[in-house]
Length: 216
Ligand code: DX5
Ligand code: ZN
Image (cartoon, rainbow, N blue to C red; front, side, top):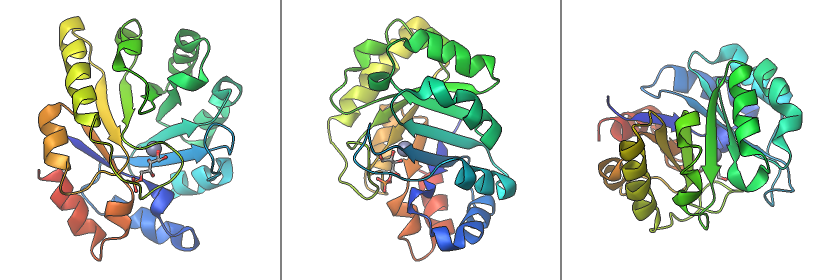
């Protein structure tokens, strides 16, 4: 299977959100990546349910919702109702990660786990068979347009080994600083999904940039 591209709407123009959603609909992108930030888990606040619902109304592709919030358990069903197809929580924000994963799946969503740059992939050893997606953060979460952290390649390689050893079907997603220079190396290391915010939305031709990321 070829890799998936998930443009991050964090870098979209919120005054023209329908236009940007249609751009993604009409591109080769596979998912909408939706970054939710609470100003506590990360030093930034993005948007919440009304914006996600507005995007869902026009989106013709799955919503891949990335929660950068503390205590995500409180809101799982709200994210389902807002239109999330994939729901990703941070390992650093979940005391009872296994329970949270079961709850996400019980609500009918795909379950993802994100890990910060300082968190080793080894923490996933005992949860890898239960999850659909692992989001490896290749920047410290909180902002779009940051510089890619090079150690990410090693993490993707180790995680791919773990997935193959355990015969897990989880996909590896890389999030942060992905561009046309590092995308190929990430795919070769084992990434299945590339998130791209700044690279897509700062492009003069976002549809062509998505196509370029897709054809790698
Ligand atoms: C960072 C977010 C990312 C971000 C990626 O906290 O999780 O999804 O939008 O943006 P770029 O591709 O601009 O680094
Ligand atoms: Zn994200």
